[in-house]
Length: 252
Image (cartoon, rainbow, N blue to C red; front, side, top):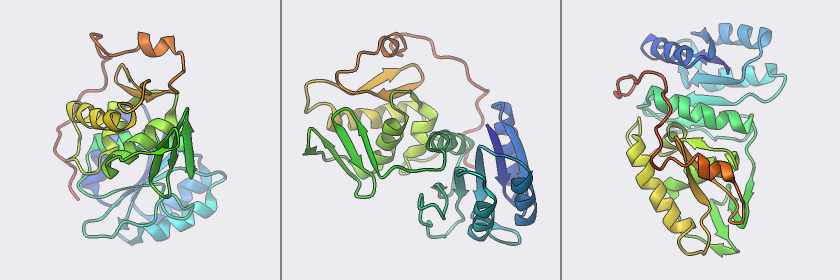
């Protein structure tokens, strides 16, 4: 991905830009709104990471200027400021994703992966097989039966349904668990996924959430997918990723 990072705080921008480049993303950096506007008007980005507070003004004000320059919708992830109220998300004017501090490098990159799939657009209603998810009402039904799913698990289900039939990585799923301390370990993602499966799959004959190497996917109950079985992580060695960073959250 080509990513624009707009952040005035060097203690966050420097490690974030370095980490994204290690992941082989092409990264441009702006410390203020003026440079961000210039870069956006002269380049095409796949995603933008924008601080809620900039040294010379509001990130939300900068976002309005950037939106006017976009030739097509670009997903924007906003890094929240301490003590701020989260803005409206996914309405076409505010950010497409928002992280409250403290946040880690893995949480930021995981959320970027999810937002990239949306391509700047959030669907109001999701459906995979016999499961429907009314995003606005935060209501999930399977076979027309309303399911009781813990609210902290709903962003994780949304990510799975938006990506279906593709896999969502542990890092991306961990970034959805906003009630967990970041970065969320793979073991914790598995524990929370077990709770989601209890609510979504256990009451019904056929499971929909399936294991994959380095993550999970959701498929229609009658979907035949040899790749899912071959890619199951049971007993398989995980692919090597970039060197792990310290799990301490970034300063905020």
